[in-house]
Amino acid sequence: MSKTIGVISIKGGVGKTTTVANLGSALAHQFGKKVLLVDANYSAANLGLHLGLVNPDVTLHEVLGNKNPIREAIYEHEGGFDVLPASVVPKKVDFLKLKHHLSKIKDDYDYVVI
Image (cartoon, rainbow, N blue to C red):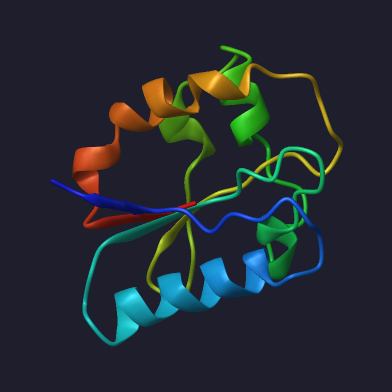
């Protein structure tokens, strides 16, 4: 059973992306955990860019729009963890479906950091 950690703030520019990236890296490297980082910043997605995923083919937005299965939107990062990036170009989605889609893959990971 995995643990989910949410890094949340309504205000922008407070370090959510940096915190998620560093926490995920520490959990994977220093503790040997299987980690998935999820960019749930739907309007200003930066986690993928922060980690070098400049233009992924499938993102969280396509998953939430029921265009692609969630496994197609997960990318293995050279840092030893997986990343589920969001689209840099905001698209209208039903963000309440996130829990449903994550439940399909949650048991594959020790930690899901959102």
